[in-house]
Amino acid sequence: MDITRRRLLVLMPAAAVAWKYVLAGTPEASPNYRLTEHWWGMLMDITKCIGCGSCVRACAEENDVPDGYYRTWVERYHVDDWKIERPEVEAPDGGKHGYLHERDEGGKNFFVPKLCNHCAESPCTQVCPVGATFIAPDGVVLVDKNYCLGCRYCIQACPYGCRFLNPKTNTAEKCTLCYHRITKGLTTACCEVCPTGARQLADLKNPKDPIHEFLRTHSVQILKPQMATGAKVFYNGMDGSVR
Amino acid sequence: MNLFKDTEHLIRLAVVIVLALIAFVVLRTALVPRSFGQYGHYRGDAIAEIAARPVAFAGHQTCEACHTDVVDLKKQGKHVVVACEACHGALAKHADDPGSVQPKKLDTAVVCARCHEANSAKPSGFPQVVTADHSGGLACDTCHQPHRPKIETEGKK
Image 1 (tube, rainbow over the protein chains, first blue to last red):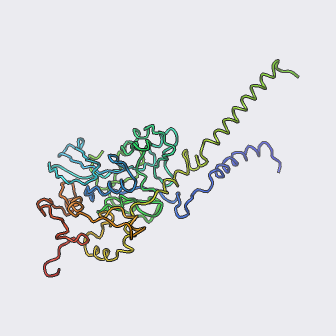
Image 2 (cartoon, helix red, strand yellow; image 1 turned 30 degrees about the vertical axis):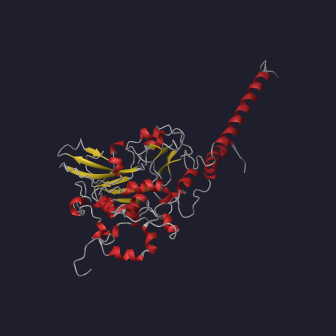
Image 3 (cartoon, helix red, strand yellow; image 1 turned 30 degrees about the horizontal axis):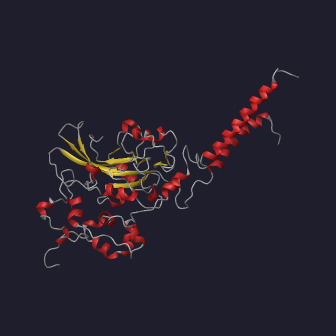
């Protein structure tokens, strides 16, 4: 086959695309877990949360989270009558020890468990100057602690306050959605210990996951939808006062 | 054929540029991890490294494989939905080596109160007590069996 100038111009982009796949190599190292077959999120049922703090304690133990820092935490909201724009929010020690002291001040009171929303359009990964934080192909937002400079740009970019600088490693840290567990077929530590089922790990790519039926039949919200972050933590029964 | 007066200058400049380019390519190859760019603008190997972390909570399926008696007991009460490690704590080490790592004895006055201490923020249907009035500091397992907490009527044991 003669390589004419015309043929070469056609072949070059095709070769470039093929080379990209050669460079990518084999996509998955572990045989049982396929990155492209999952899209992880979580379902939070506020109507079931009892504020026991089991999730916060389990997360700290599972992931070696330093004292005073939280990858997940439970907030207690108090809304006085019509003042839904001015809720009183407390989370002493991240709600780690449960809410043992009643503050019955009337009004509306409820718990809101929070964690990284594993946004599909996450602001935190977009601002990282070195490619240390990223959205994995299965939708989990992770931090490469060997690459992180500790510049804190991502911490201020997260609209949900889900990141912190680990004082021991001086690198940014956040919820990994228990990546070391979900890739082994287990649920996250927080979902494992939640006694009321207020938290459910959800695989949005799995058509058999009960989340699809739940989302279809319930009024579900995400946090700060106006920021278009593509948050994948869905809240059922969430009050409009939640920030 | 001598288009330019000082061709050597241009050749020298070209050599410098080529050497700088080679140095850049060599340095870049040496410094950028091989897996960088495998899936996107990050180190692809980081995914496997994060996934390699050991597990602390074994998961209730692991517990239930051995403790079938507790499973049967829990099935009779409302605590059937509560995973073992929600109260007993992370016990993957115990699951790996049941002989040498034993779970701690729990203080029910603390453990039960975390969930059942009354609070107006809890769902109204959830069983709650003000522990100080309910038991006066007495451990909950004095009356309640934690795996099947409902107290049976007298005579039935």
